[in-house]
Image (cartoon, rainbow, N blue to C red; front, side):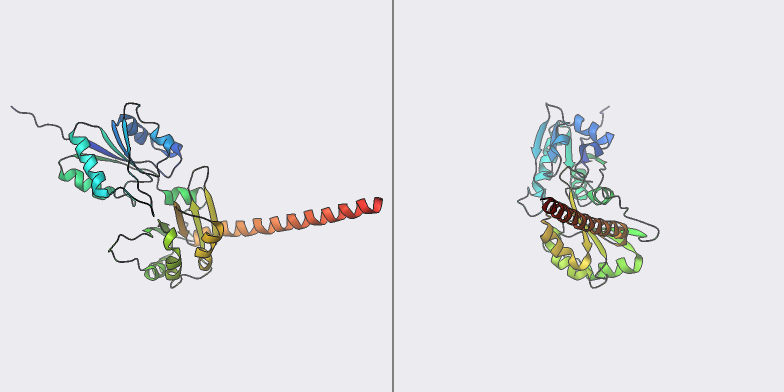
Length: 279
């Protein structure tokens, strides 16, 4: 009687948006289990450091606008490693199944007779806007959310941003755009075909990390604001009325800052005049 051999197991693990303490417990256990980790560029080094000292770590660059490791090569490494007895973990920024090409990797691994476990991570589109104290859905402002990529695959049909905007306007949806910074002029132009120019927008760079930066403006100023503020990838773009409260708070803060500076200047002038009179 022959026993059927257990197929190799490969784990696709979401490393989350950046901060190491946003990892799930299951993700931590998977990283510690691995003997071979294939790691995306944007994964926090503090997360990679959770791996066993005996584990082999291979960085497979995946960053928009930069030279990348071919996807087919990454999949070959996963297959060969698992076939060779390695405990393979593919460690991805965010979530493996949200613009992480996890679906392609699952398909390849299963075609080679392997088992696959997917361990979800917090996606940057949620973490970034949450870090500003803003929800993606709100009973008064947004009945749903759409996650979109701003970076279409070469040879694929371009996103019809005008149609997206019309749907968002009619259905009261929040738009979350990944990998869209380089295409913002075209995205802005398309979205303005269906959304009002004063629709609030936010851009969040390096979400959840100490170096996180963000800026809030209106749709008609989106591309110009990113240039003005020097924002760059990795960044998430959020569009929709859920940002109204944040935009209003920013406006009040700017007004208060201006009033404070005006009062400070007045006090300085008054102080200087008093000093002269005392002489």
